[in-house]
Length: 193
Image (cartoon, rainbow, N blue to C red; front, top):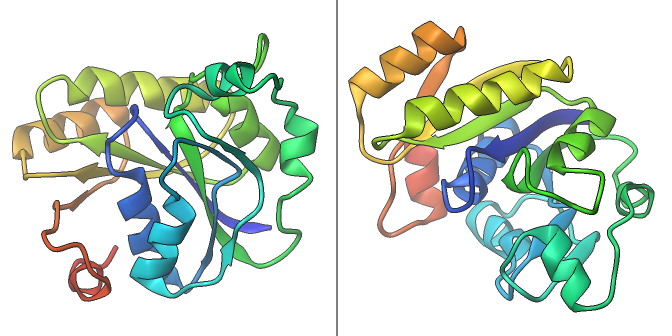
């Protein structure tokens, strides 16, 4: 499998929109191996891109951390089981759930999924106050596992000082993706990555 792994500095930072934008720009497919909550990110990416989606993996109903969502339905997340759904070939945008250190079970985190897939990583981050610390911590965690960070994409209103700080102290390329209203395929094409 080729492609990139999209993670974020936390929940609600724009990973799904970024994943859709990357799928459109690269002509890639999309796969989210673990998803919590009633809304389907896979369906949203399909709506926004029309790209090939792999709608298989672990789907848990409660919008909480994966380990807790699994526990609430009497499951324990096993990475071997989850990764058995991974596509064997092709170019894929793989989206994580939550941030890199969100727990999956008593021993493993989302970072373990990333390490096993060994794809270059694109980090979605906020543009607002606090993003420098959150983003630099995320970059440090990713690099501690020997993974390559392709870039950071700040999602939201422009904040040049935060962008410059992340580029400088994170030693990483930083792009920007504004919030879009309405969020459509045409809007994403207008802001290519």
